[in-house]
Image 1 (cartoon, protein in one colour):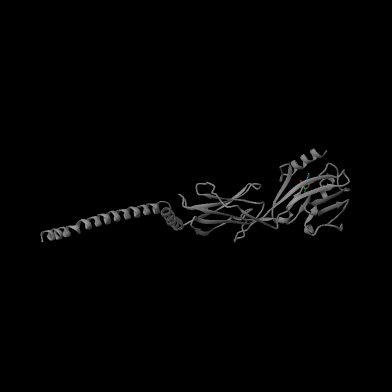
Image 2 (cartoon, rainbow, N blue to C red):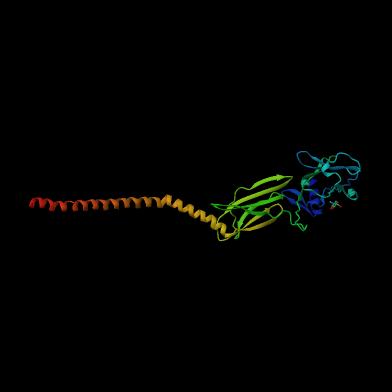
Length: 302
Ligand SMILES: *[C@@H]1O[C@H](CO)[C@@H](O)[C@H](O)[C@H]1NC(C)=O
């Protein structure tokens, strides 16, 4: 009984998407969401109960043979007070759907439509409320704000770039790319969550390549949504960082190769000097006896 019912619910509501085996209803923050639920018999005299999943189930809407949360039945969760209605003229067709007005990000989550007196028949679905961001002119700029990109600092190993996305939902994936579209190595993304929205930053260090412009791409696979921001790094920064690298390499070069060569050269130089010295002493020795010889010969002659 349950399967054809599911199929009928799916086919009658255009905005219901079947994904991973569960129904997903997707709306933009602030708009209304209709959560579908219907059976083949009239529900006018029936009891149906809508709840939201979570650590503690929340009472969203209850209808009990004409009594409901909007006409005196107590028990509705504060989160939904005054925002949920049913469709009275649809009850006789077995339609127990509800409408949530002015949806909030926190309305996102799993919902059940439960008929406790009809063998506990329960329908499951997921509501995803996409955040809406408005730019300065008040125009809606999409489900995710464009990431902000900035230069953090210039280090010996290159230019450090930071990409930041605030208040995104669902969780976005960030990537750094060069202008040829190659994905760049990046540090591990820092992710934090607040009120169901994600704050993500991703840092990378770029070195001088053929390009000086880099793109941070934000992707939300569930949403099939992608947005990006580009940053152009002045070549001067690369000159600075690679200049430092050059000096470093020079020092390492001296340490590894130039120094021994210099030592060898010095040793050779010392040898050469010694040879000169030895030659010098030899010369002196040769020179010295010469005046002695005539002297001695003089002596001899004298
Ligand atoms: C139930 O009623 C709502 C509101 O009129 C409508 O959008 C929805 O399609 C109906 N569902 C079925 C299964 O008839």
